[in-house]
Length: 166
Image (cartoon, rainbow, N blue to C red; front, top):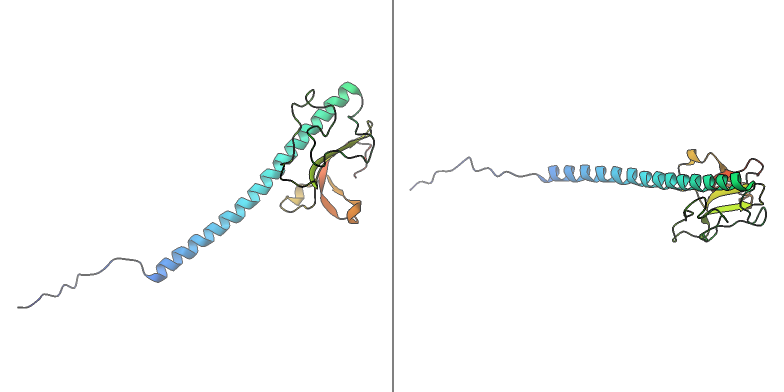
């Protein structure tokens, strides 16, 4: 008896080279996605902080328009906000803003919204030990920290026309 040889017996599948190419392409796409996601997260955090600072600043302006002075912290150089007291700008909540925005509780004391005023002038800043992750081109109102020998800290914000930058 003779057996017929079937030449049409081919097996379908991927070679190891094809599989490696697909894995490398997926890895490259994942790396690009992760890098761009981190940038979006930093920009959205910065936008949120800018929005919160603008709300606080508007509440301070409303306080000034009704009282003809800014909420005082006891004199220039007396900063409030380290550790984020619920009302670090005295007298504006709840009359001018329902609740003063706070930094996350996981933030360090050197990562805060800060406020100082002598009643005549004020400074409202967002302070951080570093500017990592923040889009530096947007730090248009950035401040120089004299304790850092003139180096730029992550401080930016609002201040009245008579207040010095720091």
